[in-house]
Image (cartoon, rainbow, N blue to C red; front, top):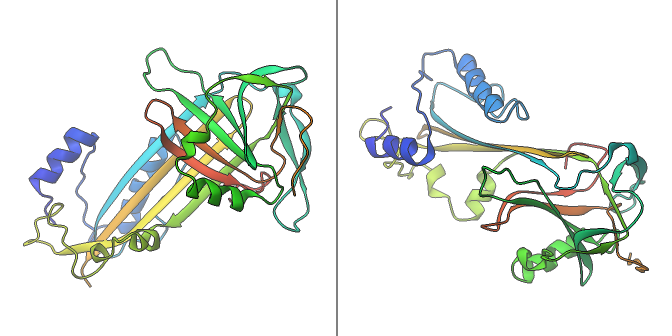
Length: 294
């Protein structure tokens, strides 16, 4: 299969990508898979060790496109490790509560980015900004007032304009903050999602990927799109990574608030934002901090 010159130049100049030739038809496909996964591990500082599952590559495979992002942020205000203690986290529905480590700043008021909205609260925790970086990042935790209010809150946010409109811009005095430590790991195929968004033909025999390959040499279509993300939050800050691999083959209850506080002891949503552009670089829902599958 021959990559078009335009695609090769664009990936190198605009995305700093490299192209490597392998023989899917006659080569050692398991070794090729391992090499791709090693690249992913290196690109994510070993937070993601594998993106292509065993047996995915076949003699009909023709290309694999991979990209990865790695993020490590240190809190502007660290949570003292000595103050972390186990508390109950109330899971959705009738599931029993679980004991998990909660981070806190300790007693006394602090000046934090916290806002109260209709039905939910938002806590923004900035990360330290490197002197050499022009970007600024924060984690925003959206906590519904109701124990089982996550879905209703997310639906309300989706229907009410930009999520960024609810992110607090000013500090206020906060008496107490309790936030569980958590680690999320997510792996899925995006084919169904992409098709539901209208990208259908690229996965069929009618696919036109002539911008990628010289069509007169090799007629190909998209076969699979794998996506994996890992996010870990602790007293120091956050480490997160995500990787996507695209494969192609030959066509064939409410609580009364008595003071300003933020106690995330039930399911919530979080977003890691790049503050200059407003881009969401990572997002997720924490349903059970005692497990890494969310």
